[in-house]
Length: 137
Image 1 (cartoon, helix red, strand yellow):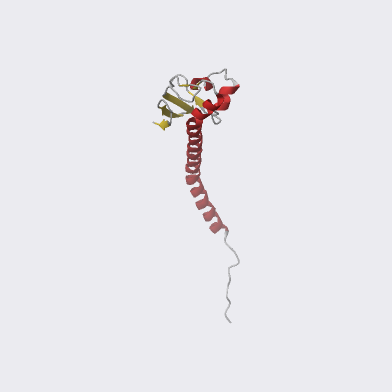
Image 2 (cartoon, helix red, strand yellow):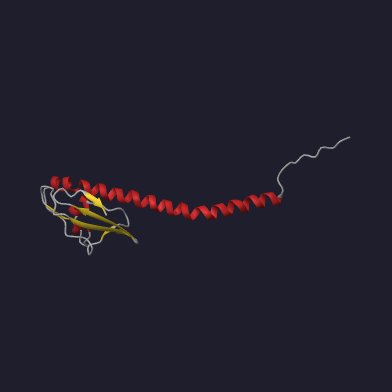
């Protein structure tokens, strides 16, 4: 008579080897995944700022008042300036590195360079007069 031995499960050693391999893979991939998430988040926020800069001349024209881009970087922001350009959380306009860019009531601007920062990363944008279409440097 032959006895057939069947396996009813995995041994403890097999489970530990699989868990060790999974742990190594997670340890290798998780930091890169976090870097990729931060990079995608930065790109989305950058695109939002560029979109707002592109639509800023029309917003100034609708408001009918002159506007200086450096007003959003000042500590004493008035409500009109804050409503024209809303930077994402953590972003700020570097007033020392940026030019004085003035939009007249018709929506035309003087042109210059604006530097936005978030942590250690920065976004340099050139705005050419008179329409001030943003171009990333």
